[in-house]
Amino acid sequence: MNRNAQKTLRRSRRRIGIRKRITGTHERPRLAIFKSLNHMYAQIINDLDGKTIVAASTTEEAVKLDKTGNKSAAAAVGKLLAQRAKDKGVSAVVFDRGGFRYHGRVKSLADAAREGGLKF
Image 1 (cartoon, helix red, strand yellow):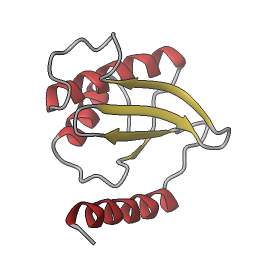
Image 2 (cartoon, helix red, strand yellow; image 1 turned 135 degrees about the horizontal axis):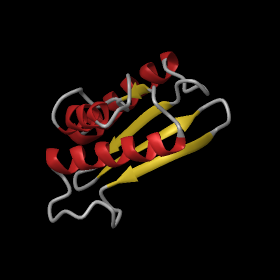
Image 3 (cartoon, helix red, strand yellow; image 1 turned 90 degrees about the vertical axis):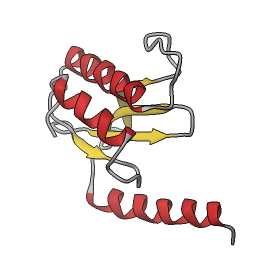
Image 4 (cartoon, helix red, strand yellow; image 1 turned 180 degrees about the horizontal axis):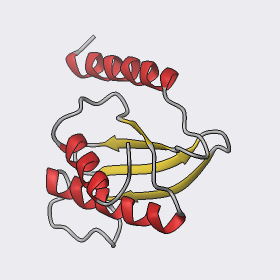
């Protein structure tokens, strides 16, 4: 098994372990993130209803950046997501880092969402 396949397998195992413990409810929906090499995606999900409440990513026109795979882009996504969540009446969430380590772009998005008014 090559190195990238091993990394993907380890991340998926971490993700499954996290999802065993974290569930989004009506009071505290789940803030799930995904990062690819070039983009950052985040959504707030109510797992009981199986519905996405709000979402934001670097692929949207609302996030106008020339570089989309860095910490400043992740922070812009976090701020946009927090603003949309407040408009929908969501103030508290549980954070699902999706198996990614909590540093770099993941931490930047989380900090920006906290600054925007989300509690987790």
